[in-house]
Image (cartoon, rainbow, N blue to C red; front, side, top):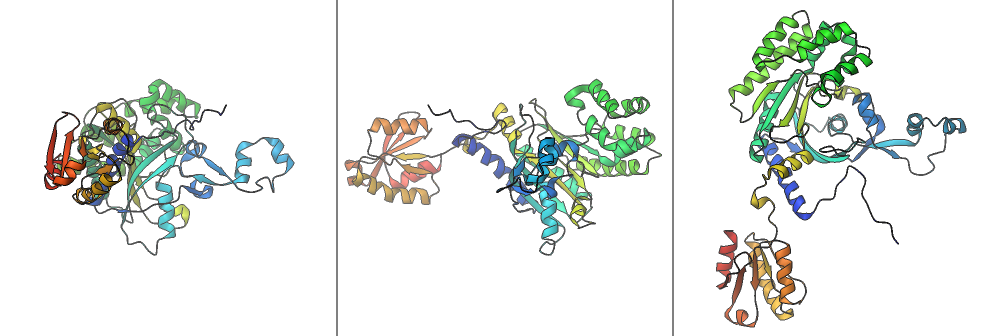
Length: 455
């Protein structure tokens, strides 16, 4: 007996209805990107590991899916190395490529490789899948789509403002209530400096970024395990638990970070971004969240994250400013900022809240019944006119019992069935059946098009 087929954990199949919903998500995001002047690119699913490694921090590197070299990948590996069972060292010997972890690092590589073809500032968007060897759980998958927009070649803070406008517009179109959380890595660096742990900024950001997931006690435990002093942890507590409006938090931070030049720069940038957004009367709330750290190492300035207010799920959009990413590929001085919509989590949120518009999941509008070759050939000419009017239509391919063809229409939620037999052909008309009401009417082709176009 053949083994039952399966798919890898953390991946999913999508039905035609689900794909219609997903395309609604992609098209909505794409339409907003176009409104703001972004152009689309694509990069390969796999990248050289030398491109990916070291860009996401130690934890991120562990989540890279590595691709085994083809051919004799044991060639050049000694018996001593094989017997060592050192997985990391061995994988570096027979894996040169990996599946991309995100779209930002491949984009940085793209900018460096195509710098002579690009006009700066360069506004690109990209909608493609990424892969992470993470532990699958609700809202977290090993294969998922990201919908990124980035602006490189300019350090203007108006870019941050524009990207957050895009976020606000997209979720307003979806009908999802969200909170736009913002912070700044410079503020976090200033905090690390003030508590006397500047060299531990990476460990601090990784830990406090988990605050809403594991709680304050576990965050403090992780900080201690990473070698952060008890005194520094104590100093950190009132800062990451600051209450009040964004403006009040910034005023308090000005007192706390007065001695930190980088911290004060982060406050200045945050004030500009938040004030600009507030003047635009966005449809969603904006909040300065000092626990937001975005664990990826390449962020250097403003950082963003979006939380759905009516569904318990992780971040559904994130992003931030990166000043040094292209530098590791040999092109220094190119600043960039970007956002990434998590399409799979948005898909889950829209499903839970049942927010898909009816026309987003509509398939075929009318099915033509097949009574035989003569009738089917006649219907093909009608179908030409119907489809030319933008109406989604199909002809049942086989001369099957009418009951079977009606069941097909019912199972596919096709709202209308067109019946064309000898009598209809003689009169050059169509019997149109409404599948919901059961009502049937004999109408001409022009009436058929008018009715279907209005539904």
